[in-house]
Amino acid sequence: MTRRHFEDQVNTCRVCHEMTAGHLIKYGVRHYAHPVCALKRWGAAFFDRLLPWQLENFPALAAAEVGLYDELVRQIKLRPAEHIDYSTLKV
Image (cartoon, rainbow, N blue to C red; front, side):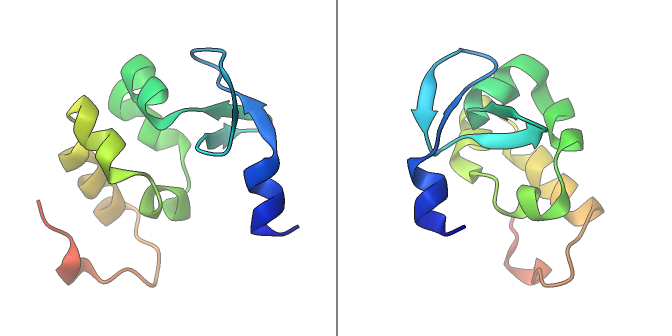
């Protein structure tokens, strides 16, 4: 499937129940949520549900909006993917 296909796919946020095309984080089988909605509901524990590549690509502005940017950076450092350049991460 192409990236275009996923952007056109409509899913429902499990927290606010809004139907949205794109901009949702998949955290389980058929479970999607807006990044801000998930962080407001589950807090930093939501990061435990994500794979390392999902943490890398997690929207930093959403984490900062909820006050969890530092925790996002910490989680990325704890569960590294092999291609991250840690010198670019700022706390």
